[in-house]
Length: 222
Image 1 (cartoon, rainbow, N blue to C red):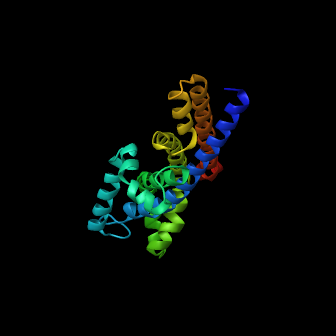
Image 2 (image 1 turned 120 degrees about the vertical axis):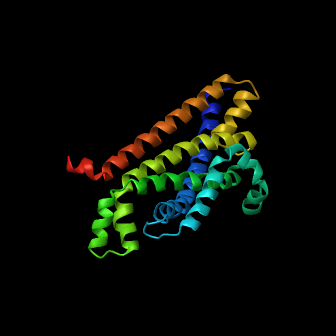
Image 3 (image 1 turned 120 degrees about the horizontal axis):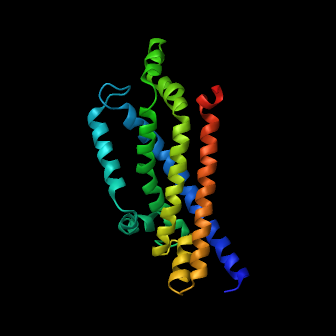
């Protein structure tokens, strides 16, 4: 394979991967964020006590998280076909990627919110803040750096997941590595795909870390 052809294949596959990761990461995180906040604030004695609903939501989240991704992709093929009109291709791959993102990000958000100093919550209550004001002005504000890191971790995981959907015709870098690097015995293509994935992960992680540091009040104070 000529270098020009390899570059064109890598570029097209990279754009497909970025499209899958960006859309599924954004949609899944937007859905997972309120679920994570609810899990952190709805236990007994919390801001919105609803222990039974909290347990039920936690069970669903745990069940979704414990399902291996490749099995999830196959299991929801009818649902994917219903939403996307097909079960293969980049657009179809966004459906299982988004579903996998929701419980993963929700648990990370829950942990980030629970780490907020309880003293800040009590101080806000003492000043007459409503539960919703506490959520938006205290919990989410204080947990913002941790949530940004959680979003970064989610994107990194999605890059790995997007490579997996290549095994079932999902497109992207994973599909390129399997079709050319593995099935056609082209180790140079496989090596190039691995290098691009490593660079992509490093760029996402570095950008996420830098953004989290920027919003970390402790760094600004120092």
